[in-house]
Length: 267
Image (cartoon, rainbow, N blue to C red):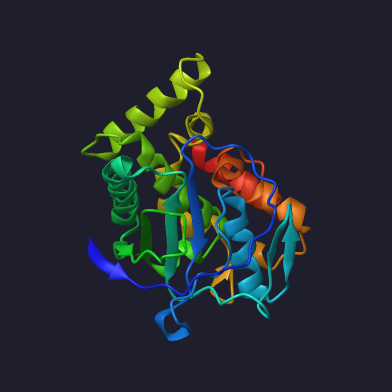
């Protein structure tokens, strides 16, 4: 891990309507160094806002949903040549910072696992210099391949893997990881744990590797990105149905994509 990256902070904030997440992790995109490494929008815990923002950056059509607003005219630009995602946690006591760092490294290990499967460059992790005025005690910047931005489902998966780092899963290969994922999903189904991410694994534990392996077949591209960014879905449809959980359940707004994932799973 390199120290330290300096970021130009985004000071505007809105009253966001977000579902509770046990980990308390918060996300935001960061612009390229050529654009001052600026925080692109407020911190969000709802990962669906991230793909909403990427869609706006690609199409230039502003989005506004559940209090979150993003516009190419007002927000620092999301880098469309690299994944640049900043992560923190609130509240975070000083004695919990080292534990949070471990969880962040665990999330990075998960990302690296799937990057190895995809055959793309590995994400790098930097610690971010803390501004005096920020209430957050520990902030990290994940910088990865542009491939992760090519589809909203991959944006969702990237942030999902970071948050799964909270579980500090021990594994050495894909089979061990899938077994650990299934165990978390089973514990959620039996009521032994109450955790949204474990719940999402019920449908995705055995599909994440298939999705990244088959991404060229699944995600038709227009102007080098998934067509779904350009399709005329409403912001509410896009927000709620272009996450990795929706894809795993074959419940996206794209019927052809739904058929493709069903066929892939049945093989």
